[in-house]
Length: 256
Image (cartoon, rainbow, N blue to C red; front, side, top):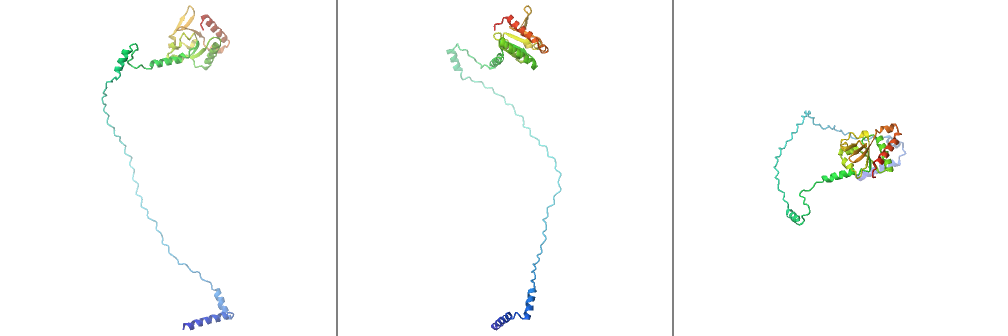
């Protein structure tokens, strides 16, 4: 039965293919071409609404209490322990006794001397290095007056002996006039008359010889010159000052 049915289908298909030009089949073919395929609708998938996670409700803010003051615990005062003074044992006493017997001519010093005397000598040497055969003292902060005295010192260094300008106030503060007024080195001092009277330590070395019209600091001759403002007002007075200094040096017959 199946064979007969399949042969019938094959014969029918063959007949149709051979008779395509018949008008009956042309209408069928046109209708087949005009039929459009309907788009296949995709199934609509329902999307479930996603619910947002519920956040925990914030608790009402509590009032912050002020921090409690930190109380520091005070340590109990330490008890002072009595200092036990131990007797120092001199382990070289036998050696010292033996040295004193063998070398009695060497002085024995029990206590170690301090360096105070050495410091004094060092300080004195610092000021002693400022000494020259002639010095000019000044006690003013006026730069113009200082320059004038420095020029005078240069002239004295050229025509006579080395001359230095020294700020008297520094020596007065340390009271080192005994070091400065060394007659073995210092031979002549020049100072403005109005700048020395407020130096009490220096004035303790001041002396006069009215008969010879001489003034000294200890044993060193002192030549006082007038107020320096005069030489700025009238520069011609500088030459008379120079002559007076030269006459004083020659009159003293200084061993330069």
